[in-house]
View (cartoon, rainbow, N blue to C red):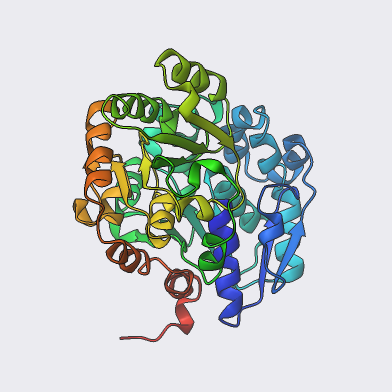
Length: 385
């Protein structure tokens, strides 16, 4: 999501808009990627309790939020409500685009406090909420559904990153599906190709080395890298290969132990967070997405744009839409190591046309996404058909 925000902000700035990225606190992996054309504003948000006086005029809202305000991380986002309301009153932007659930709620509350009549608040949903709640490891996710039902109807517009996420949100909120727009993420940018061709000093990617299977994502339950490692162990029974996973997270130790237990530990590298995954994607033999659920699946588009063959689980939601019902790359059942291993083996044996993958990825550019967002953010300025 962070990379999506940075890329969308840059694309909107390229199209002549004045754009601020407003953060509760100034931190994150992608701060260095914010273009000079975009202003960065940090609210230096305090604890959630700092927001209580501002929320006293909405006692029902405050009562609903109190349990969430006790959760670290979430408390900081809700604590940004007073600062964001002040920013809205002082800066008077035409539109406010929020991303992720508690940030969406914070944006809606800040507008209700600031009372800027001309401001349009657009909330965006980046994950399949039902799956995320059912599999929640963190308490704030288990408490989000009633808050979404309560607050999201007050947004001026709702945007989801795939049709599957949109249908799920409509079910959760009981809002008409027509109220929820689908806008695919701004994945492919002009900077992708130079990054894809950047040097990669890694012996596993040298000419003549065994093919490398690549996975990218946080090492969390959602990405189900355990299934990918099991699939890789099955693959290695019949051919040599290596597996690289880019990303960091709480499952690192368990995944490392699983690879050793399956006897493939020496050929599995958990390489940690990588600011430029494209140089790996352009050199990998196959990119594998093993997720149990997604919102969209940016990494699939990125891999295709880098010319890498892909396989994916048919998880909710996004991969089926990106891969055109499996015509661009095979879709396999969730949590099925054998099916995933078979799909990877088939891609290695008969690599698909890489240009076809690049052509599909070209449909998910930052400019195409920005144009669609313009119509939602500034409807009065959009041409009428």
